[in-house]
Length: 556
Image (cartoon, rainbow, N blue to C red; front, side):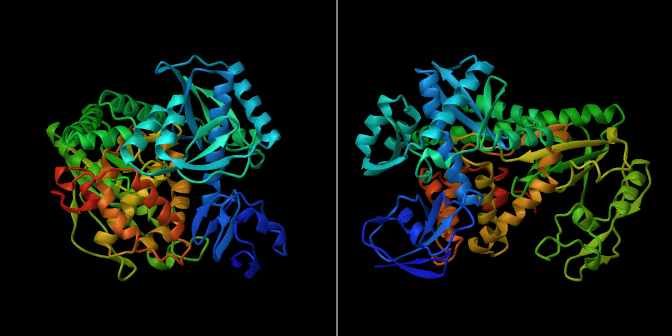
């Protein structure tokens, strides 16, 4: 039997039943990295995956996106075992990503355990011990009813609830010593592959970093823990607790009991309440003589456009007239546009904007002058002149949506008191279970796949290929400035992946199996498979989700 190795471009003879990891000594070359997993027919698998038929295999290192996820998942299982040994009878809950780490809490009887530096150091010592001992992660596939018994004995009730709602015949999980757990994707072959990690006490929990101590310190120097982001996540977690939907299993139960209409109404009301509070704060600042400009910024597919429209309505209830302009009209001519590392025009760069003209126009508007707004033609790649007059009265605010809104360099010539900044992002708090979270990035990617297909006739393949470049732009131009915001609006909706499921799945299935992007499409399909579908007709026409699905009462 022949296996084609994509790393070498050669075929390798194997015996049926050999594992992927057995191929490494026979590659005929030294890989420039230590593999942590492999893509087998463009699906990410662990290195112990057995080969019983011809396959294409590509070895993946821990620095690739897929390899990084395997590394982090494996580290999380090691942390689970460390918590079980250091604090028996407690429950580890991995809540969400923050400051390039993961915020974790340890609970007893659903209340946070008081932690100390000594406890955190003990957990770290156990992680080092596991890494040095090179304990295998043993993959098991068992009848789901047997897996449920294993998880119930270990007190993993959220995992049990999810499995009971999925009705799958078999379930895959891993064993680390005498401990069992399941993860949304494969793990490393053994704990010896996980050499770099760190823990830092934070709030009533700690931050888990999949980096060395030195790298963690560098990250925290350049990106201190995001206090405003933490509060937004924490507020949403409290909301999840109130409505009694903290994980996917509980959401599936709500779907089965026909309680989704109530969940949707409450979640939408929470959005209105949050935007109302932001509007009240802007109104207060405006009446005090500031906040003439409101900037909304956030990463791709965070729902900035609908947020701006709904905030505009809230401002009008405070007797403030919002007037909107688009930063896109301030692009420099194409021949002056910066280029990215691939040589393409970088429209996400701050310097793709005519900052001098923008600051001049804003200053004149704030001083009561009337201006003529620029108009940019993407077809011609330059600015064209049209009659677009604008003037601000004392009860007006200028509402500007764009990715650079939190960057102080955007409005460097404007008095900071005149600029009110709102950060918009889909800060997902719904978990698959206590050890598996739903990535905010994945949530936004699914939104973008559905929106691009519907409104831009773009395939999922194209959107997935473009996503790494989008993420690099966010890391450079958006995330470093998130703590500059005066307010943070969490645009996630606890029910949205259940609604998105029927839209996204057919689009994702169109990704060709012979393309590398199929690995990402397959992973997203697997994520969506955990959700019971929620009918779209329950979603109000004013919902932020309609920006991506269609059927909105707003004009875009």
